[in-house]
Image 1: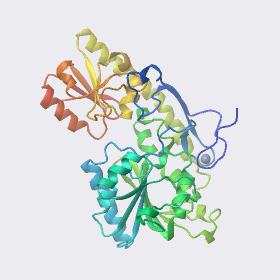
Image 2 (image 1 turned 180 degrees about the vertical axis):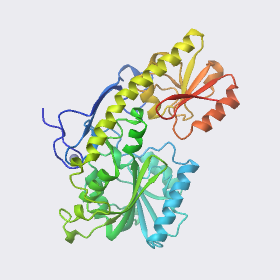
Image 3 (image 1 turned 45 degrees about the vertical axis):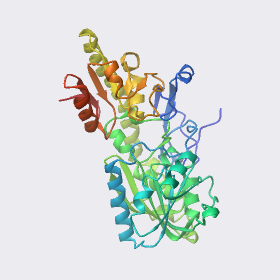
Image 4 (image 1 turned 90 degrees about the horizontal axis):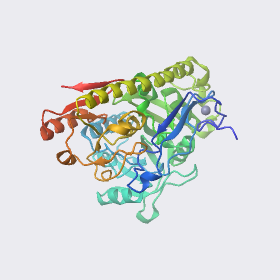
Length: 416
Ligand SMILES: [Zn+2]
């Protein structure tokens, strides 16, 4: 068998993975129906770290829908306010009034619509056809396209939308890509000289801080730190102007296109704002990451024991338990603990998930109403960002006798 290679720098990955995760959901979005359930099974995921560039990544193929941007929390007030604040700062700092922006992977325009509040030209590309239609129906200048290769010209000649653009936007999309540098080079080639970009990805440090192995999902092939993100950006010809942690768990950067003549291969790597992005694999960050990832094994065992203890208490007292949150975290937790055999069902408000089954664990996904037909004594909420909101719904609709628990960091806590 050929060596697996790093998706960022192309060097061979170490033979030994940092961690092997068994029984994981095969995807967060392909949720099997009654028929598909027979074929769906848990998969083994091998997490590696590249010795050369330091990027932490799975060595598997991407999910089939990696070009699509499917957002579940896009319209939440928190996210919309965050984008508004980011756009405002970007436009003001770099005097971008009247400039052309393009969002690569705009979904149904959740964040592009916020941009239209500002005096700029807003365009978006999205690969998933029905999301393009939704975005267009809301009056947004969106068309169906993907950053296939570095020479792909991002335009829609029918509607007269074309580059070059002054600014690109990319929100939590790069981590799904098996060719992140290619995607970034395509954006580079569609920008004006000195063009800017605003890009976000989930933070690996955040996941490590809480040993959140249940945050790992095959959909996310790469797990970036500021160092490794800077590396892939530099490979594509960008320099990082600003770095910021947003929403506790997300890396956000403002980047600038370097002129080609500067010699992207040599100079870029030594002029980064916060040091040398090359060979990050040789500094202490790497050792830090590999020992931190060892914490996942422990965390997984601990959570397993905790879940068993709770399930045993419920069994002994003849009580029943359900999960709320058909999120990727919920899927992973259910698939890798005793919940898979003993949780009665998984509640989720998203209608397209209802009537289907959680990947790998095959727990039925139901609407909140289902509680009235089949009441349970306890509900474990696994829906980061929405915990309080859901707890409120449970108290109001299902009564105060339902014990509410949540997984928020390393442990399951009871909510009073
Ligand atoms: Zn690498």
